[in-house]
Image (cartoon, rainbow, N blue to C red; front, side, top):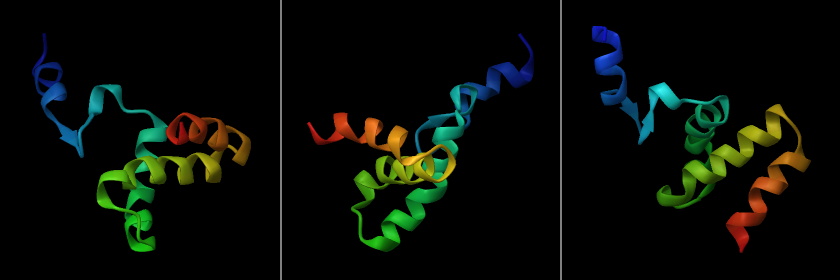
Length: 72
């Protein structure tokens, strides 16, 4: 095992492990800042930011399918 492999699981950003990082997670982290500015509670900002990123990159249909489990 290399040094990079040993340290990768320890590096994280807001609870995201870099080894499992997806594009959706990166947009969620970026847009969570905008969600906080809009008045979303900090605890829910990552989920809202992720939905905002999905809507911007893919489309609204996919974002709303991700939103439906959050409502229930």
